[in-house]
Length: 283
Ligand code: NDP
Image (cartoon, rainbow, N blue to C red):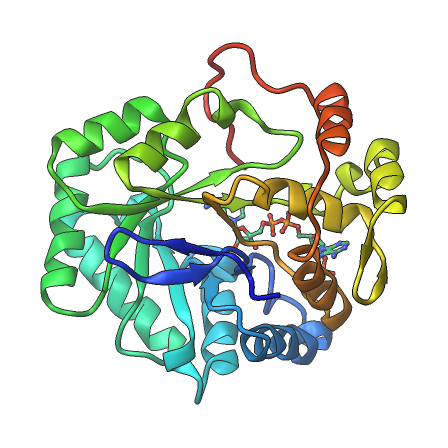
């Protein structure tokens, strides 16, 4: 079954599953498998790889550069600029440094990692200048709540994506932000969709649902249920991080799963949907 796709404002179609890379490249012993997992994901048809200048002070970008060497055209490469580098000149400089570490001369999507002290209008100018230079194809933001998105829209920029915390434990964005972004043509990218591999993956309700589902490789896991849940809407692109081949395979297989009404009701019981506005959470 072909993987579902999500379409960016510029018409680019992307598989709804991507790959995160926070904490990769930090440990020499894990390096080879981290690279192999990313390569296996690309070979399996995944396109989005997400990194940031912040991750490991550039180590993640360097590792990603190694993983995409020779297959750059097949990858939709996303990296992020720190708020402290988000001035007009700062964005341009940070972008050059990221490109060097990544071993490429363009980014598919460049995000402001979170909102800092630099006026948004200046960051947008920096982003637009990089786009005009052809160095980035698109730009976007991360950790922007509804009011931030409204302010951004007023500046008249062309924001393609908003990368936000979204998993069963953090559902606040269902109240407003997810719909707001979709209507505005901004793709939501869900980070930490597996709850960073923590307690969420040991929750009895997820285990119970997993026991009722099968993938083509056998019994489903709680992680696959957590991921299938994030992907259920069809308008959210998830970027779980898999540092091992087995996790990567498992995450790919999660796209085969369709949660039933009763699965969704059980998950709503254990992780209630938001009833009122809560400020966007971030990690
Ligand atoms: P995730 O929710 O993706 O969880 C990653 C953890 O889950 C790792 O410990 C990983 O272990 C484990 N894992 C992966 N697959 C499985 C599986 N199938 N079964 C069990 N465990 C599994 O957390 P992240 O915080 O890494 O979020 C994903 C990505 O989102 C980041 O890597 C980063 O690219 C981005 N991000 C962006 C932020 C922002 O502010 N914009 C903030 C946080 C993240 P292992 O490594 O051993 O495979």
